[in-house]
Length: 367
Image 1: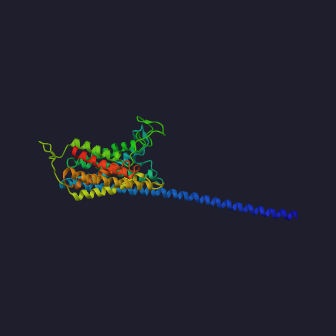
Image 2: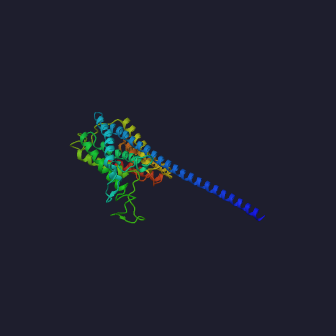
């Protein structure tokens, strides 16, 4: 009887062990499946982020058409080909220069917080499937579109009085050095960066208390840099012949412009601006979609407020409705909201648009 009992217990023990082995194998299989699923989810998230950057980068590139139409609608018809030629060359020069040296200067390893020193010609980006990530191929494409937008701002500032060859030199210098260096300061790991500016003349050196310069999508990095370059260019080349009366200094209207092209260009720019601002989340995974939605709302509110403020200010000052001031107002509102768009509420965006429109009018009559 004792032997039969021991045999029964042994059989039960082996059955239990077999069950435990089966459970262990099942758990291991589930763990492997979860790990595999995590890899798939991670890959899909990276793919979604890359797709988001490519889509938004394409929208920003489409802004080149907006600049082209806007500027073609402002210059005299005889100079239209010249301004369109500059726009297409800006995008092309920016692509070549930003690929060869600009991207490395902007996002390479920092040299003293001033300039990047690696990744020239994208030599550090692995040429394999899924290895580029949002900081690789798609990242370069998105940032190139910004470079082209910055360069093209100047085309309107020096329109109708600058040779093509001189403009080529400017475009190469800005795309290769001026713009990338500013990008490194603010968006890379330079001395102003919100991520890397721990040591500098205005920072504490303590990661917990050191705050860098925050410019979410480029009010300063892109538009101010392009604007200052345009202002310097305009000062150097001077006004167009006949723009000012030589005796009284009064402004002469040389050409009233093509309102249809101006409006088309502004609508294209406004449309592309959603890629500009929303795309600056640099991702769509990890809850970034909600931030992109907020950015879109604030961008819209600021542009709309600035448009109507400019329309009514223009009427109050000039005594008639002026579509050109409304169009410029929209652009002023878009530029104004670009830096703080993810961190302000819609009512703040409304005020920012209003202030931007007022500054636009002040600058218009001052110049």
